[in-house]
View 1: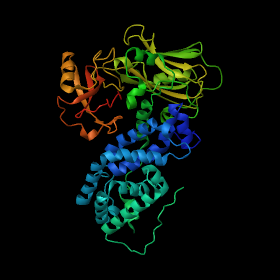
View 2: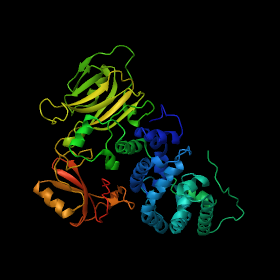
View 3: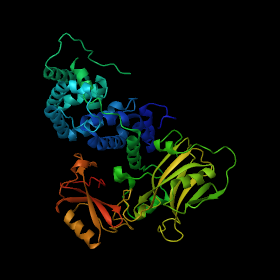
View 4: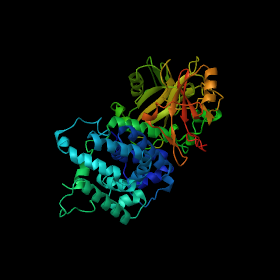
Length: 199
Length: 303
């Protein structure tokens, strides 16, 4: 779509330019809207995602004067804003997870696909996982899903949620323990890289 | 399989948004980037005289007017344009078909829309004939937004390239003889442009712009809904013979802006609910933005 002449420069340069040329902010939208939309949709479903994403970019636009221009990538900032806006929908999110846990039918994905064999075989695990996610404290779920679904690194999650990296680490560790417990325990010897590496 | 792998698979079938969905979102976003920094246009000045909300105060419902175009920006909408046929050679100075007439006046091309309901291809054809890669997309608009730029897209342009739309003579009443929707394009316009412009609506057609229904020339002219109870506003709309549709909004906790839950629109709106804004909806109908709870600051206008 907009690929043919993708403007150069990091996110910060476009934020800076947008202070005088508001249209320049559209570049941030073009770079990040797809990823953020998918992330928010995955958490809340398509209906709520539409509004949350629109609001995310408008909020970011309004707050662009406060953006720390020493940070070249705006991803953590934008995901942080989206996370904040999603917190208004926490009841919807938890309710949908509970529905999935109870019925095996996921309100969030129902509109996207028919059920694949693969997913049916993983049915029980999926339901338990949803139940576990529903019981997590909001801040833990945010940190965990920013890593697992949005692909943010621990330092990026810390930036997005305005907490220290140590806090992110402990939230995620505890969230993972909870999930592991719900899934019936897995091989305790399995070694998992704590901080996923991202480009 | 560990819990992170399981988690990674949960809802992994949720697809990335389609190009169309993103383009629609971008439309909404761009429309809201109504830039206080861009030069005031005749249309904008017109708004001010009519006491409309300044664009910056309208938040997500603002309008994008035109200013110098940026070379770097490649908007999604530009992709709908046909191939660039314009060569570097001389351009003709006038062209007309049944839908539009274009002529060169001084430093700019002035395109006069003869038929606002024509097939959009006819407009493009005329611009192409002038060596311009400009597409026009006319959208039904409420009376005061006819001739207003909803949104524009451009690519391959420079700072000096300008494109815009308005009514001529300025401030005239659409539909009256001699009052025409016009589009101006700077003489040396070298990129691709697409212009979304308000046109008169047919009866029953929903308006695609957001405006203040209390503005001069709109259905609730002179009436300010700001914070009044629903029952009181309904008395006024009945008096004026207007139909009403509600949009239930949820004021943001911080007092800055609001959200709309598409699934929360079936609630019964009570007479004591608060009306924050009234917008033109279609001929003979207005949309009231309402919430059940009263908040200190108007979430729509920020006042």
